Image (cartoon, rainbow, N blue to C red):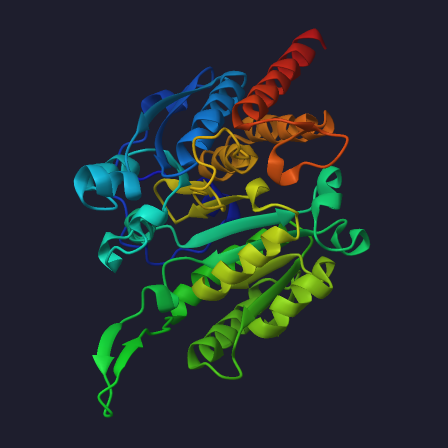
Length: 404
């Protein structure tokens, strides 16, 4: 028995290094060896707000696209975030983490809501997200931000600035200031209350995320921009030193460096200059959200979080949007596209991933829009109807394939 290497990491052919303390060892399903039929276990974490709505739609698309490629899924649904707090008193029950670790991939909807905003930190839904990332050992977060031709007018930027933008942000996910110690509250010598956090990275943490980013850039347009604050922060000084030292291993990649404040400005001023961006946890959190708005709606963007082994975590980058929860107004396309990333980077099922992406593109070509991406002349639909239209397109792909 062995831990299945994550297809993304395997594809990127990373050099051997110390594994993260992450999921327990688990057998790979024997049925996966069959060329005729492949079967995977997927843990669904609908979460809070619009999460259950978009996950339900995405599950149907994933099932159909997989079935057309000889892939079947066994789904199990678990509680996380606010829903878990209400049911179990913790944001990530042990039962949920164990199920996720034992699966082949994890699909998350969204977590959080006004109801839990005033909870203590360890009882906030967002704490469960940090916990599951650590528990799964996922250290590389991939967030694409591409402006689709059908939605270029939805961007708040001028068309000539937004058109053709295609960026991949590779964010380090399990280190830096979100996890660094010491952290907490105290009192200074004036008797004032203080809060403090620690931004810390080891050389090995920087090296492993940098290698992922170099390889991602190699499969894109061959340009990598490392974003830091090396003019001020010692952690960023180490970051830049390590990324620069690895560049000799990737002579075909054009490496540049940029301070984070300038990068934030350049993403708005001239986003097409970027291909692949690699950065730390907190900078990546901010810049990837900024990049997402270049596309016109955060409701269109998926993400993948992967480690060296075990299941990856796939989720839309939007929040739980409690103000529209239960009203059939949510845009499910980011979650549907997250299933494409799940198929490609989590399971190595490239053909099924392409089916999902092609179906989303064709649905947009057919003029269907949820409220966040609606414009005059298109057809306004809700979450369920958008899912139905994507499913129809997946089915029509099958008919074309059969008739060809």
